[in-house]
Length: 133
Image (cartoon, rainbow, N blue to C red; front, side, top):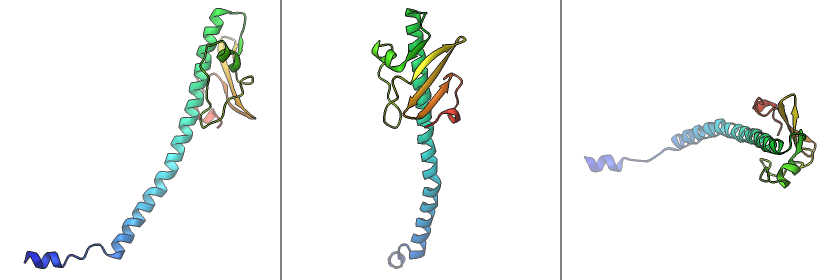
């Protein structure tokens, strides 16, 4: 009897195989846009983290000379207050246009690359939707 049951096994039909492929396609169609959003959000978070690092470096520079209230990215890197900063997603920031400015007791960061201003504001209060990629 067991031999007869084993002989009657025919495997997957074409319909069953197509159903599995359709289900996998639907799952992929849902997952791929989600992954793209995760990558975009992590790049925005990296811009914010870079801005916060620039503020920390500017605070160090300010303790050395509190008459200066504007520090370019180039100055902070040359004076070794900050390790070289890489732009998320490749490329680099404009070293002279990207800067930290002390305004009314608040550190404001301007992060630029080319014609794009990624961040313009206080990095401790900036949200993802305020960051430009």
